[in-house]
Image (cartoon, rainbow, N blue to C red; front, side):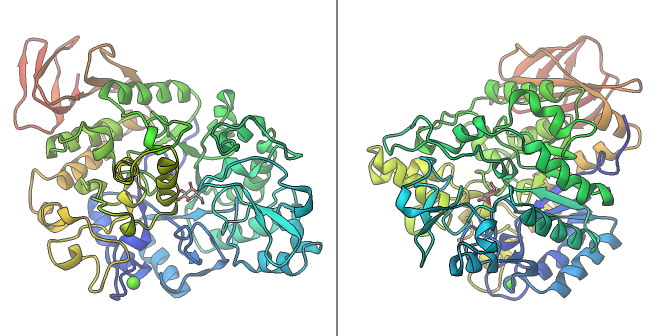
Length: 554
Ligand code: GLC
Ligand code: CA
């Protein structure tokens, strides 16, 4: 396999609004990130993905861009951005921006122009239809309601797969594609390492628009349904790659949901559209067409199976990007560990099991200190548009307001968006002002400052994991070695070999709050990582402590 510069890197996602506020306005910013670069370097991460910081009305927190060439003043200036790129480079780190091109903002000049003259050239930048003909299709927007809304001041309507402030760009129009490529190259010329590519599967619509089988009483159907019928996205993606990323050897990771079974090679094979794509197999587990209130809780066995299935699918094809959480998901420790069992030990186990999988490890801000879901005591505290919609969906299904709140708060995107907990001072040291979103009340116990000097903290465990992955004796095995599940049938145990000609490494997690024995198939040579103080081994039988995590060299 041809080696690429990004294969052996450790990635870290920053959600700028909640990362660190340098000027006391309650909103995290670019200068805040610059100030924390040494922290990130010390953690050992190499590549930083920034969620959007472009000019935006922030209807969907920056995933609604009104100027692709400008930094939103709330996040800083273009000079700050240039400085951030330069400062990262100085430390041997790379930056990825978020590429949001399925849609723009309804405040983008293109959309303004389309409203003024829907029959003119900018009308063709979007999907417009005459209102008098009724809705062209019954698709449900990802944030609720129809994907069609009236184009203000005209007799037309426009399509938005996400919020109504996020009109979809018409990728069938070559002019739109050229504008997008121009922008990508403009950013790559600034010295970016590449992009995380937002919601990209949605750019190809099955045309002409038509209804599909409704899946709820609202008569609408999920976007997933239309994606089953969409063919030919590869033509767009190949053109984009050729015109932009390929010329720069840029890294790209796609946010790809609902890919068709046999498309993995097209997406991330040696000549794939992207360098990598996220594994969402765990993320989507238990989803219900009814909405969040009907989600099925995931067990240790499910988690293991989801990870291994994803590994099998990508085997011999390419690199998945592995995540425990991101800005769209609840905190992983609250989701993937049984309720009430968020001990430091368990957090380290979950972190370790995911981190050493084959693929590119991504850490989301705060994960490295074991940040947990927040407590939402009333809907007034909710910012996230998706949570607002899902709350309504739950009420419509007959849940009481209390039940609906409980159900949606477990999956609210705000869980991951509360400010990073830097210390136990006011507002967790995130801001000198009032934070835009309430700090998680547990910041006095869980924060960076407390964990830094504590040898046994989650933070120091993450540092050790990263250091081990980069250790010259093992790096190749972790990056390129194969993954072979071990004792897959053993309940509440997740274990796998990482193996190549040099090493046979065994990664083990006792995924339960009780001890358990594991019979090895040979005696280990050494212990490379252990989240417990002891290792109890009699011949080839390991006596694992509750939530014990180990990496053994065999
Ligand atoms: C992606 C983003 C999410 C956003 C959506 C629409 O899923 O990760 O935050 O709301 O796309 O842009
Ligand atoms: Ca600020």
